[in-house]
Length: 269
Image (cartoon, rainbow, N blue to C red; front, top):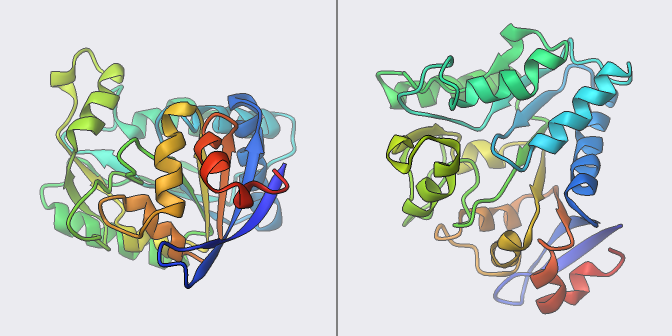
């Protein structure tokens, strides 16, 4: 089910529009989010897709792979730009996001390797790498649709809670909670990189459309804070309240707090 909500901001004066699509479980959330990405590719075969990593998008990528294998989708003219990469990990490292994207998505579809773009975590000049990456996105005509997850701290990409929003792609020190959350992918917490290169808030907000996917009760409170609390760099995802085209696809568990505290936003879901 879907609902289009005009939601009051924290001061009660203005509203922003977002679309909420509810699914009963993770598999349903994955299919619904994947269908929006698929529609983008069908209607514009040379789309620029902004892609994300982590556990949430895995089901989305499995759906897209399945539809490609059925002959429904063609990625041959698509470009992709990923949100982020760990500093210090080579593309061959099994916990790098370059490796993740190749093993979980790219190698299973017909996207051209030269059309896939991920920040360089080995760049000696992170500021220069950020400027290069932002220029690359602009040269492609900008991102048509940006897939996002949301971290327990409210981070999008690796934009962590901070005193201010950082606009360009940049090097960031990872929050303790983020390191702890990602430790499950590494042999130990000590192996988790402490820094990453991430698209900045400005780079994300420049996307024509935003698609945020979330699942599980652990994301319920932060999802509510991001879209119904004040816009603050302490909850980086709250900046999405200022984007003109946001769709949130989430399972019932992740939408529980919104349903309790902002039931008007869930009408039709």
